[in-house]
Image 1 (tube, rainbow, N blue to C red):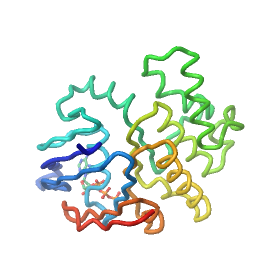
Image 2 (image 1 turned 120 degrees about the vertical axis):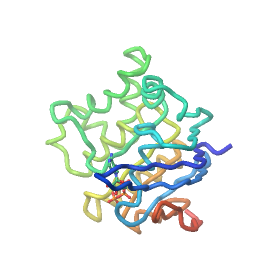
Image 3 (image 1 turned 180 degrees about the horizontal axis):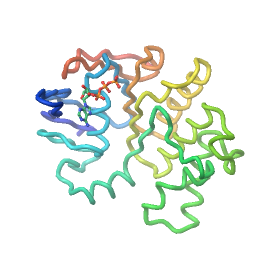
Image 4 (image 1 turned 90 degrees about the horizontal axis):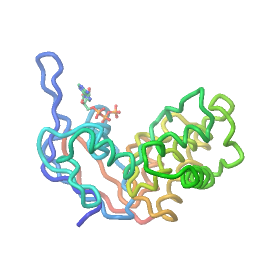
Length: 229
Ligand SMILES: Nc1ncnc2c1ncn2[C@@H]1O[C@H](COP(=O)(O)OP(=O)(O)OP(=O)(O)O)[C@@H](O)[C@H]1O
């Protein structure tokens, strides 16, 4: 079975009198270890898809199974627990808390896990090391460059050792050079830490780092294009 499996997933939103259906009966399989990039015109439901896979939102119909857990059957509180331990989310604008240091920002998600303080410290240090920021642990977000802030956001996404990480335009607010560094980092995490990635991007260069490129348009996936990474 695929690590991430969507079957017959639909999601609509009401906007005034109008009903928008960004996702219309879609199926998707992502195998363990894959790095999937997802492109498509604005407003086609890419972020909606990430929110469903990460259990932030739930579909109107269909099932979503991640690593053997049918998350569409979980209650809200069970879903929150599941998400804390199993899924990482990388945002476009990293969403770091300005009054916390890099270390404390990365530590936050671990507070939801049952860990000893020693285990917690080890996880945070490992995550900061993985993104090359051990020497910036005590810095506040305002003392970091945009690329470093994004790397803290990435460390926060991997600190719980999730099997799956979803990323919503992770390079969207970075300059070309920094964007390339973040792309290389994501590729490394995928290959070396065996993290399965689903990344939404508008940048066709960033999309190419994936092992599979997909396009979502008008509620459906267009023919996926296999690539060699
Ligand atoms: N919570 C919500 N309530 C109402 N409508 C929503 C909600 N979330 C998304 N939508 C609508 O669903 C559609 C898909 O939105 P989504 O953000 O998933 O698109 P996207 O492909 O990620 O777009 P972009 O590339 O611009 O980020 C849009 O028309 C959006 O306005």
